[in-house]
Amino acid sequence: MEINGADTAWVLMSGALVLLMTPSLAIFYGGMVRAKSTLNMMMMSFAAMGVTTIIWVIYGYSLAFGPDAGNGLIGDLSNLGLQGTIDQVVGGDGHQIPTLAFVMFQLTFAIITVALLSGAIADRTRFTAWVIFVAVWITLVYAPIAHWGFASQGGTGGWMIDRLGSLDFAGGTVVEMNSGAAALALAIVLGKRDGYRRDPMRPHNIPFVLLGAGLLWFGWFGFNAGSALSAGQLAATAMINTQVATAAAAMSWIAFEKIRDGKPTTLGVASGAIAGAVAITPSCGYVTPLGALAIGLLGGVASAWAVSRKYKWGYDDSLDVVGIHGVGGFVGMISIGLIGTKAVNAAGGDGLFISGDPSLLIKQTIASVATIAYSFIATWIIATVISRTIGFRVRREEEVTGLDTVEHAESAYDFTLHANR
Amino acid sequence: MKLITAVVKPSRLDEIKTALRAGDINGMTVSEASGFGRQKGHTEIYRGAEYTVDLIPKVRLEILANDDDVDRIIGILVSAANTGNIGDGKIWVTPVDSITRVRTGERGSDAI
Image (cartoon, rainbow over all chains, first blue to last red; front, side, top):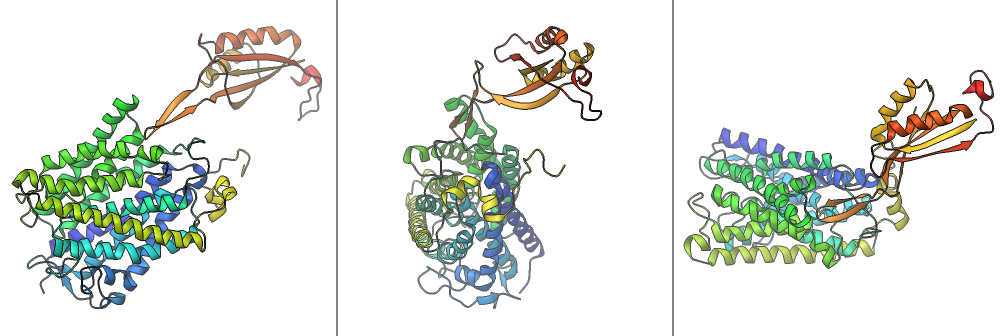
């Protein structure tokens, strides 16, 4: 049991980087909502950090990464309370890291995935219901899908990674399409914000959005390059690919805006960066930097187009979780089946355009569709049950007042001219 | 005694202040205002969704003056606030019944 210090240091660092992404998301989302509910928006991310961590240490890690219970669907309960992880290692020969480093790293993925969902239900969610939802969703939706896509156990682990053989380097299914599909279900069950399409709902602080996007970009290096679980060639490939795709999508999103709307916007450049980072998430360890460039350019345009679909189809995915994470994740997953190459990762695969063989593309499609279907249906059921029992939304007059005072007895800014002089 | 009220472009405020001081007018109240008139608002775009912003920010100036000074003050305001564009604002004058200085209790013209 020889621990590789360099690999361990990188994974520990990456865990910290990815954890920072959730407060960054709070800033990113918080700037996009109206001033009267911005604290509530940020609070949903911080609650996700709290609730998910508690569940992860008690049983969440075990469900996701414990020994497979039989069919590749879920882990068993051998690691309850993190028993059987202390003093253990994970990783191949020469690249072993403490299991607890892996536990921490994966915890940060679970946190940000559920936190992402809050963007679909901005300005109208009862906070207590959100806390309960986070606990139930991590248990019934995140843990199984993380097991499917991430729990590699020598061919007998999660069905997508070990049995189907689909490729998902850092969470195109587990994190991105999962959150996109779940966000759509939540937006449909909760319904639109009061005044949606009637009242202007402008972002109240776009510099916040840019700050949040910048910090997310930074944290994403831990998310993607950290997913190599080692400090070597593969991590370096993932890191440069992340940079290339994120930058490319930031530019392609605003190019799309310039052509369609006449102006490139700062909200667009921030959104494009996130869309690019999302699209490269599953593919960063399987494509060349030029492949990453293509994925980024395509991902930015695809998401820029997708976010306007909500107006046509009538759901209020307030901060565009579906258009950015759902669509971006799909672009990334499918692109592996097209331009993935073993030249950058022997454990990867050759896509249709490289080998002429569509089998990898088919596997990528199966994993994507299964993730979307399970996540959407399971989330729809959970949200409906919460909605019909304790209630998921605040009352209309509370929504009009703003959630910060109603749910938290606080306000983000002192707008009154005459107070505290 | 009159109250001169003006609604003008915020960007002209410094110029107006300087011109009033130069004209020996030593009192003015400024408040932020917004409104709509002949000057059109603008359109903002967020992720492809357009929002029309039709209330335009202005500043409202209030100056108390003796009847004899009114025309001169209006002249100062017009020349300092004028940019030649739509949206430069308006000035109007209303009669004032009484004025009292809070510190001394002086009334009328002495309180201006």
